[in-house]
Image 1 (cartoon, helix red, strand yellow):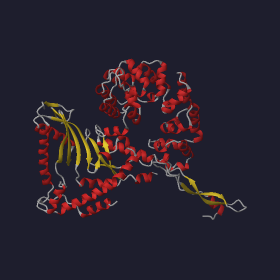
Image 2: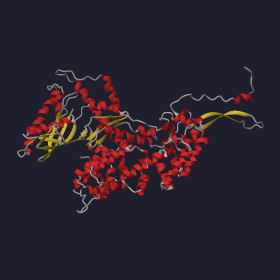
Image 3: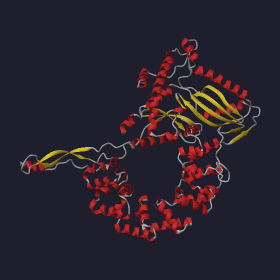
Image 4: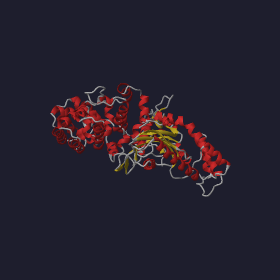
Length: 331
Length: 296
């Protein structure tokens, strides 16, 4: 019934946000669909209340009256009198996507909302596919903005583009190491660098962990970007700057998130799947992976904190918060 | 204080008092026959108690005197028992109307050649219809006949299909007519044809209407005379049209011109469910459609 429906609705799940809609609208639509599913459950049996009524005494010949306790059905808890069982649900949103971007959007329901802060503090990377168009420059770096400049792009080759992307990745690699505040001479830092997990564990500007060109057919090109602490408008600005580096201009036609932390495109639910059962199944499918990843990232974060700092102090987390995360990961 | 006998003591009824004021009808429902019978009919009290003074009105009514006459009148009109609940949830003020007024209005509608079944359907779909005076109903019917320049029979069919045209506001209808004529460029006879097929177009949201038309005319390149043949496109969500068109364009099957081969008719394009669309029109599986949607 309703209580078991709500019991299975605690945790994180991913949704595919279509382009052209605001993330708030997506969150509200998902909330409406979940409420519809929860309220459609069978109502419980009608309740009874006890009233003391006059009735004849059993087993006596005279007409004597006495009070007997009887259960009488009551209508105070009827659905038409009290209203629907669920009127609102609190759903939290992970890393947001702006209106023109599309892709994986992580949502959290019930107790899963507490895990959202831990997911944020894990500072995981995100994957995007970014489509660009050479030859135009607009004021908001998108195709529908006000046109500023038109250029030729015949001189652009695949090798030139790859070279530029390699330069960008190299410069961001240096920034990654700098913002992670690790003492490079220590053994732990060397091991982390070998595994490739060096990344900043607190606030930093947008950092690109990896960028490569998947497809190049002038004037269109398709990039795959792995980054952290980004906004989609900064990615569009990146496309504009790549155009400038190529001695031409470029606008961004599509920004699509393919991975947010450990949620991939396969886990994301499409609009037709935004209903109670699909979301409950998605939460259950994702729960073990969420717990494992958060545990791993907690260990990593504690590892970062134990290393001697080279200068600035990081954002300190007190040990009680660490213990709290441990207990949720164990669920 | 004088001593009393056992029998007298038992006969004293000392239930706790009813609350003098409350914000919900649930406190009074167990003690009021009227409310219990309304709940059994299917009236949603939780929705009615949100309107100010509605709950006070209901509590003061008596089932035998006031409510029963109106219910019998509604049943004579042709409303089924299962429809009474939703009807009364929407229009509970009908209990304060005079029975003669209601009968006059029904007589007026029948004088305009609406059949008994038509009147029953109109009252069911637009519960506030009988709360409108004869004069107001007459004005509204006249408005639709003049604005759309339809014959009396066609106006009658239109109003029976969508009775909330008579009870709703007329401003959106006037705005939409201007949008169709001036902004979208349809001729009067084209608008008449579309509105008789899909009456909901008259009360659609202006912004959504222009967005849909912009996509269909400028991106899908469908001319006016084909849109007129399939007015259902104005009744569907824009995202559905965009997704399906982009999928067909990706497969190379986006052909909406009846003269050319592989023609896709707009009514099938818009109204069939996803599985039928994928199998018949796109000739692929639903999985492929879902994979494509995740690349948008």
